[in-house]
Every structure is written in structure tokens, then in C-alpha cells.
Picture (cartoon, rainbow, N blue to C red):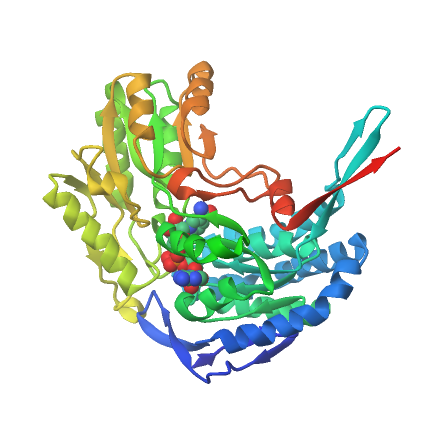
Length: 480
Ligand code: NAD
């Protein structure tokens, strides 16, 4: 049994409550570890450690802070095999995906912000002949970072790296469903000699330790990624305290596929955008709008690919589709498939839980599922499923495609597939999502603003946006 601990003040320690939560391996359905069921008492210890560490961390020359971040990145790269294995066991994702995407990206997050903090200039505004203003961007102090289970180390470090780079001390909580690589990050901090208390990692449920982090008065900002309902609850909780809050929430992302697209490449990429990580990426496409002349052909190509993609043990090198993250999540996704059938949907591929033989017999596997014949107003077209389930709808004009895509409470990411760049520009301008990809998906430049509109969140991460979030601006006006 793998019992993990909180990382506070540079040391691993048991939760004050001595209570633990089971950690289940999604591919086997078996308990393989215990994680601390932390409470406000652990938050208190972490805050004390962070307070002690803060003055020296804030005063440290930028280059030296950047050296620490680069050293963490290097150590993540050194331990890539161990981290990829841990991520795959904890989350159920194919080990190849963890090795190629999740873990390298965690290293890139630290490298990127090690550099970005040196590029973060302050503004100056001259009032001719009268005065000069300059704006200081100062660390906020102690900040909280709370992340979800779908890209565990990738999203955890996407918050921690800019927060540290900007000179803050951090109290971070990974999802209780996928705590393992976050725990290993503590070892990495020890190895590179990150000063004690600069980064504290607490484990446990959202309701206990997550909420306690949000509510602690000494924690001045919260960067949260997770579900829209949770984000709304946190926003409500924090409103009276006026804490800085960044919310990266759910999505229901449209893919607009035009008849003039590069057919084969678009089939491949849209399929990847739909089912990568078992459809459990906030940016995954889940509503596919296909121009009528190619509707049948495109649909058939997707069905063929779905039928050829069978879930397998994620630890196998050749696995392309692993397990869903938990039994409750699997049940939720299946309930949406049932709902789609009740609402008149045609299940064209998949739709069934998969039982594997051997060690994965009790794992949470689901076939890639394709549904059509649902109106845009159907639950499966409006609500986030966050699993390997996509819906297809035909359209006839650009205007109709745009209207269908914008008919959503969410607003995270859109993909547009066409050779007509003028059309792509026009739709990109009018679509209500924070991110638009044309003829690509998940092509990331870490300098760009990342985030969603409407129910998909508040604020942006990435590049200097993140540096702005994790600093307070202070204007100084000097009269001549
Ligand atoms: P979740 O909202 O259940 O949990 C996210 C984190 O918040 C976890 O660490 C959880 O313990 C914590 N939490 C839960 N309740 C809390 C509370 N009351 N106070 C403080 N913390 C609390 O989300 P999830 O199921 O882990 O993740 C899936 C969701 O995340 C999906 O909706 C997905 O779209 C979204 N997501 C969004 C992005 C993005 O960048 N927009 C990226 C990845 C995932």
C-alpha cells in the first residue's frame, strides 16, 4: 500500500487528522494507496511555513529564482519514466501519453516561467511636462493553486510555476483522485534545494482542505482549474473577501468541419481531439458540426476509427486508450449515453463499458462513442460529459455552423477545419470561445492567453497573463 504524505515546510508529514482517503487505480479498480484527508489544521501549518519563507523568496534576485525553476524542470526530465508510470497508474491514461505529453509539458511549464519572469517588464506612462508614472508588479504573497485530475502534473505545474516565478509562496492542492505525481514534485523540490515553505503540497478532498485553502485569510489569491459547479461555489465563497480569483472551468467544445477541409488529416486530427486521454481533456472536441456534402463520408470515417480503437491496459506501451478516471465518472458518462438514447440519439459506435481480461478485469474502460440525430438542445449537446463521447450534426451554411457552435453556455475552445482562410478568420472573430484552433488542435504556444468565456471561466492563464494574475500592480506617480 502506497501511503503518501503532505509536503509542508520542505518535509513530508502525515495529516494532522491522521485520516486517509483511498486511492484507486482506474485500470484495475483496486485500492493501491492512501492519501491524506487533510483539513484546515494542515493548511495552517502550510501557511506558517509559507509566511516564514516569503521574505527571502520575494527578495531573491530573479535569476536565482529562475535557476530553481529550471532545476525543477531538469529534475522532472531526469525522472520522466518514473513520473509517466505514476501518472498512468494514478489516472488510467496510456503511459505513452503521459511520457510524450503530460510529463514533458510539466517540465516546459517550469522552463517557460523561469524565462517569462525575466521578460515581465513594468509599464511607464509619462504625463508630458508634469509627471511620470511607473507601475510596480509585486508578488501577491501566499497564493493557493487547486487543480483537477485529468492532466494531473501538467495542470498542477501550469499554476505553480508562474506563481513561484512571480515571487509568491504557494499552497497547492492536486485532485484527490490523482495525487501521486504532485507528491513526487515535493521530492524534486527537496532535491534541487528549493527553500522550505516556498511550495507546500496538501492532499485531500475539495470540501475539506480545498475549501480551507480558499478561505484562509493569509492566502491572497486562488488559481483554480476544475468543474464549473465547483468554480461557481468557490466564486461565491470568495466574493466577500475580494480575493484575486482565476477560474479555468468546463467546456463543450465545438468542431466546425467544412467540406473543403483536408479530409484525411481532418478525420485523424478531429478523432484525436475527440478521444485523446479518453476524452478527458477540457479542450477536447465534443460537438462535431459537419458540412452536409461530406457528412456521411466523414461520419463513416470516424465510426471506422472508433471501431478500431479498443481500450487496453494503459501500462502497455502500445495502449492508445486507457481507463476513465473513476467508477463514479464512468457511471456519469454512461448515464449520458443512456440519456442520449432516450432523447432520440443514434449510437453509431461504442456506447458500452469494456471488460478486459487479466489485471484490468475490474477497470473503468469505455468504448469510444459516437452519437448523432440529437438536436442541439439535447443534454449531450449542452452539458459537459468529459469522456469519450461525441455527437455529430450536419450543417448547410457558415452562418448555421456558427449559430450552432455559439448555442452553448460554455466558451472554452473551438476548432475550425477548412482550406478557406477567409472563412476561418471570420468565424474565429465571431465565435464565443477563448481559444480557436484552425486546422489543428492542442497546438500550444505557452506565451498565448489560455482560458474560456461564459461558464468556462474567468481570467486567462499562460504567458504574461499568468504573471499579471500572480502579481499586484501598484502605480507610482512622480510629479516633476
Ligand atoms: P472538480 O471541480 O471536481 O475538482 C477540481 C479540484 O477542486 C480538485 O482538486 C478538488 O478537490 C477541488 N475542489 C472540489 N471542491 C472544492 C471546493 N469546494 N473548494 C475548493 N476546492 C474544491 O473538477 P474535476 O472533476 O477534478 O475536473 C474535471 C473538470 O475540470 C471538468 O469540468 C473539466 O472541464 C475541468 N477542466 C478545465 C480545464 C481548463 O483549463 N478550463 C482544464 C482541465 C479540466
